[in-house]
Image (tube, rainbow, N blue to C red; front, side, top):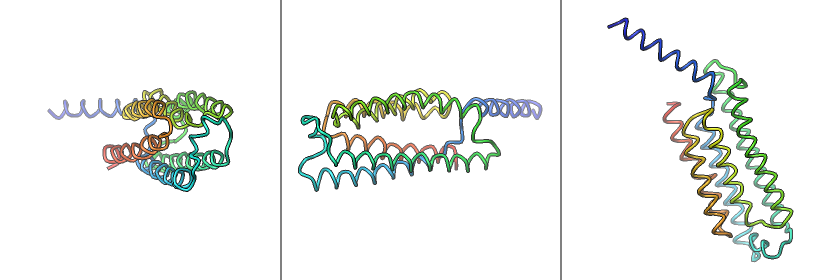
Length: 208
């Protein structure tokens, strides 16, 4: 009996080692929670500035095809949220990898970065094109769609739950594409609430 238990334990350890060598498992659930909070705060600021205190809602510019100061400020706000979210994810992932006695930058991390970068860079270029054409109403849908595609594309190299989050983002992006003018609400739900739910789930499942 003890020999059988030992074999099972050895197989489990070998499987764990193989998984860690091929998958990026240093992603912290807390980083997802914080990213969601950043997104909700940003969405609230954007709503207060551009939807409540301004008669010319940002998305009306899709008809006028003109660049407004509001859109410029919205882009700066989005970039600030992105920098905060990425910085927090890297910092917490570094702490988690050190706790596990592993290096953050390894072959698994490289695969994750490459497979996530392709859809994100493509999406970033597409968003710049939308900006140049004045199609501001499609910015939020595009960001959700390409982010969702990036998550799905990366899921095979990290936690499988990432794929489910990616599919949700894609669905929200498609809905936001149809309901033009309500992009900020879909954006807040996708990048905000869904990240918080995902982060709590991952923290409870893998970090507690």
